[in-house]
Length: 450
Image 1 (tube, one colour):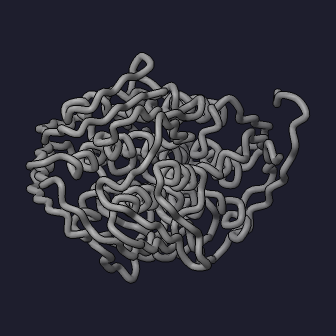
Image 2: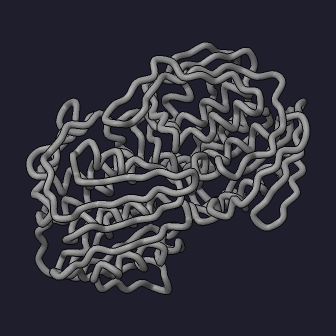
């Protein structure tokens, strides 16, 4: 097993065009919705990472047949009442909060006890934000002190609900939206702005949905008990995975990069807006719509004059998975960058805000913190020559990849633990980063990394 990597050379200048694996959020949603469709669905460019594979395994345990073809995954859905199980069933979501929370919405009409399990990291995360609204439909749900394992026993007598989502969580909103498919009548949701992949998929599948948008909230109405047919879907590239290469190129010397066919849904492009405010040259080429989702090729080049930022809180939700690498850009900026109300980062696969602050301090960046607010004092001439070890980050895939970008951009001699963590969301990470010239050495650990 490749337990950790060593990086001891900065990235050399490059001009490359790369492709990125399928979007994780969209991949999981297509698997779950295809399992509820009537007939065959074909999903192209499905992300073959652990989170998505676990989604496939979960629907398989619920009686849905699927198979991998040469160019796509085929899923044979059986409609809104198509899950067939005998007796109790355990479903393992691994590290995926998206899978664990969304699939609960599809289980509220199953008259059997189903237990949702996760890995050590996921089992520490709060599930009351989903279980509380799902109970309103009529399902019986119990949890371990608001955490996994969660047991759900569905009802044959569901009712539509009115739900206010105030966290800006697309997972919470989507869980209720999926549950609304099983309930008679109209479910009404008032949701703080967040990713809208589920809404766009509902529209493309002609599921009865009405959406009224305001500046801060979306008002959504869904009419339940309407079956939909199997579909074909080409999953665009993942902007969260792209973010590591966007930032690496930005911080590298005399480099240019094109990333092909990436999802640039405006609820996901906060990182681009933030980096542009910091002086980055980033643009979208060949922009187009696919089933309501905006896709484009992303162009980015090195920036030698990075500006600090007073980051607008309105961009937090659209960049929540990318702040780790945004912090690296702030570390190289001229002046003090300010970020506020980032407590949601600590509710991810690891306490990301806590860990990011530790890593920034480890590389010599001064960080001022007041609860969920931080100020990063940038060093435009930052060059590292010391040894740095990154460990104890709960195998968080994004922390690992952030550390790789820091090593390649800032120099120094790095040892970064848990290299297998990339399999969670981006199994092709090493293949792609080597293609732009990164020099990485893999090592096996015989004892705990010190």
